[in-house]
Length: 438
Length: 132
Image 1 (cartoon, each protein chain N blue to C red):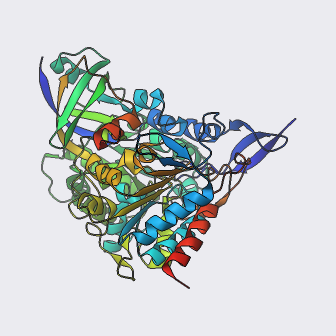
Image 2: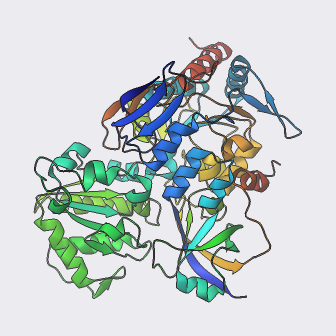
Image 3: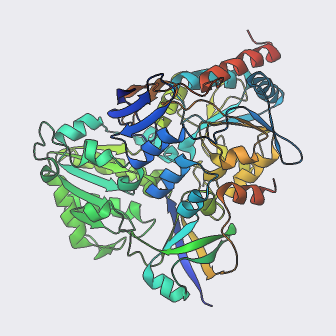
C-alpha cells in the first residue's frame, strides 16, 4: 500500500510551490511518485531516493581517495577548523531552512566569521539597490488576483521558475483577473528570444548590458519627452508603445532577474528599475519584485538581517557586524586571499563562482555540507552529506515575495543521516567549548 | 579555421536545472551545461557543424564546450553557456565593488577544437584547481 501526502512544498526555486502531492510507501521510507511539480522539482524529490547517494561524511585523503568518518568526527573536524581560523568564510545557506541558518549564525558569531549567502552571485546587487532607494513591492497573491501588466525584465521563468507563470503571474484566474491570461499584457525584455519571450505580447530584444538606458528611456517616454530614434537597440516607437501599455494597466508588476543584476551597471540597473516603478505609480499602481533563485535565499537574507542587521556579506571578524559589499563579499574575499578557512552549506560555489575564486577554496582548509556530490565537495577537504531539506526534514523557508512557508518532511532520510540543523548544533556546541564561549 | 568574437552570457536553462538536481557528477550535467548556444549565423561564421567541440577563450581563461544551435534565438553576436563550471572557467570575476562578478557580458573568442574533450563538471573544477 502507498499513501499520498498533499500540500507539499517544493524546495527548488523561490516560487516555493505549495501544492505538490507526493506518493510514499506505507512505512514512509520510500518516495515513489511526485505530482504537480515542475520537471526540476520532480527531479529533486526523486534524486533523494537514488541508490548511489553518499550517506556518511568523507574526508579527502592526500592520495585523492575519500575515507568515511562518523558525524561526530566530522563535527570535531569542522569545529577545530573554525576555531583555529582567524577569518573563516561561512558561505551558502540558501538551500537550508531558517532554523539551521540561525544555528549557523551562532557559530559565525563565536568564530568571528564572514557570512554570506548565494545572493552574492544572484540578487546581491538588488539588495544594494533596495538599500539605496527602497522597493515598492507586493505578494504573489496580489499579482495573481490583480496584476494586468506583467513585465519580465532579464529573467526567463519558463526555464528558471517553471511554474511561476501558471501559479501566479500569467495564466491563473484571479479575483480581478477573471479571464486569466486574456486579462493580462505580458512584456519581456531580454537580449535572447527566450521561451518566455516567445509567449509575450511585446518582446524588447535589448542590447546586452544596455538595460539602464532602456529603463531610463521608458521614464522619458512616460513624460512624453524627446527620445533618440533608437535606445539600447529598441526603436523609440516601440519604447513609447511599451510605456503606454504600462501606463494603461490597473495594476502592473516588474519581475526582474539575473539579466539586470549580473550585467554591468549592476545595482544601478535596479536603482533605475525601482525608480521606473515609482514613476509609474504617478499614473497607476505598479510593483516590482526580484525573481529569487534558491528556494530559501530570501529566508537567509531575512535571518541575517534579523540577527546581524544586514542581508548578506556580513563580516564578524572584529566581533561586531560590518557590511560592505566589494570588501566583505565572498568572491572578493576569496580572490584577494583574505580568508583562511572555507565552510560551505546548502550551495555550490565550486560550480557557480568564477574559477579564480574556486582555486582559493581548493587551497584552504574546507568543509562542504551538501546532500549532493558537487564541484565544491570535489575540492573540499571534508564532505558532510545531510538529509534533503524540504524532502527528508521540514523547516521554515521564505518565498520570493518574503512570505514565510513551512516546508514539510515527506520521507525518512537514510538511516543514521543527520539534518543540517542537527549537524550544526553539534558543531556549535564544540566550537563554544573550544573558544571558551558562554 | 575561423575564430569568431562573441559576447558571452550565462544563465539558467531548464535542462541545467534538472541536471544539477539529478547529480553533478553525472554525464547528463555535461550534456546540459557543457555547451555553448550559438546563433545559426555565428555557427556559419565559425565554419562548424552543430555539436562540434569548440574552445572558448576569454581574458580570464579558456574551456572546451560543445557548440549547439540555439533554441532561444536569434541572438547574433551573443553566445550562451548555461551557468556552471564551464561558463565560470571564463567569466569576468570582477565585481566592481558590488560583490557580484560580471557573469553576463564577457568578450570571448570561439574556435573549433574538434579533438579536445569536454570534461565532466567536477572533473573540470578539480583539474583547474589542481586537486586531482
